[in-house]
Length: 605
Image (tube, rainbow, N blue to C red; front, side, top):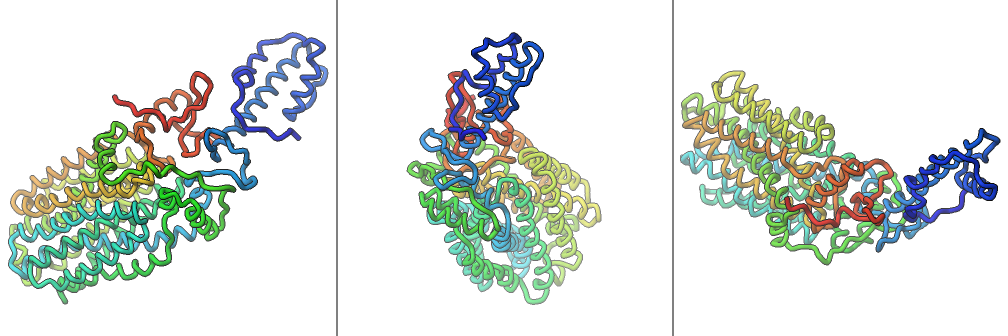
């Protein structure tokens, strides 16, 4: 068998493109070279040459040396893929002796998807359902309180707006908390916070108290995005697209459950009980959080690699898998930015500001269109009837509840559509297609009457597509940001979406009562803007590893890698392709030295 090889970069004289020139020769060798031929072919596990036509042996030698060069190069690439420290490739082979290095992404992928992630999906899924119930309730709460307390339309709309004002500040606050004190601790505090103020909302005695309590509930709801990031930090690369859509099913189930709960509770025991019962899933969530582990990626960012490896090992044991030998590659946490530095990075750094512009546009459009369509579900029927909400004995009739229930159930096939296309078309094109479809169906609403079956069908498809777009945006955002700023950056993007949520009630409620066609044109125009923003996103994240360390070049690094990789065949890494410890492709410069694409300066064009 061949001797063990030291996986070092081959000298240029021994690389395949150099030894391939052996094919140019077709003459008999000098007698002194014959022993070297035997050694070379034996070393490459090739049979010794038998008598052959004149000059044929040299062609066999060229082929043998090419095969040996490729084998040496593959071994070197494999060693680099498993990790190198201070530029020196580690000498361990796959599943070899301890002492090697592997990245966090390699560890997550090795642990695979199994029982540990299923438990996590159930508990964080209840978080998503509780969030959806609190927000879906807004379409019922405003009209119910308006009739009981004789509120104006503007006051009724403000009950929705104050929730989004609270979420605007809450997403920022809870994102910082998650990056500083851990995802799990933050979710526990947030869960208790929302439950307490939801109960106080149910006990409100006047409009002012209800508005303040709902704003504080919104502040707590701003932290529910942490559960989304928390979940995806445990998911292998190949499973993220599929499970983004599956997890959004919890949101859709929460909206459907809230519609059914309102149908059962609101006409009988009133809106106070609806508020209290809608917060009840948080009790189950709070208890379930005690059975989860903190994110290993969080421990990696604060330098506690031993705890990160311990959690990874527990996940692998639960799933019946084996981690790579060795230790996790640490990241430099000395340059971890604070919240204000993160905001400056996102807005003013040439490597990040383009992503921020288009991604925040998508978040704004998602919230503006989604919550606008939720509110239009109830408002359109009254605006088209030219009657007041409080003219009858009940705020909503059975037909109204059926209308809301059917249009809300549309989110389920919307997520199924996103599940089908997200890993086929990619994150960017999937969002563009779903937003374009949303704009098309909103435009179809303009000539329709709110009491027609066609109106129900069009709203059904509009809700279906916007929910799918929201799911893909929720997936794309944590994928594109590194771990040490992920929840803070996610919080900023989510906070910007709250501006859309704050504006949508005045368009969907106040404007629709007077000019329904005008509100529908505004929502359609916003969906078209989002379509363009999705196409213009600077980076496609399908199949890419989630980064753990902050790169000074931002996504400009990745764009540069894509452009340069397209010249050397690296923009779609193949199995066995060379990567550095952080998962970035490594190419060869003109001097034959290794150059990490993740360290180049961002483009300024």
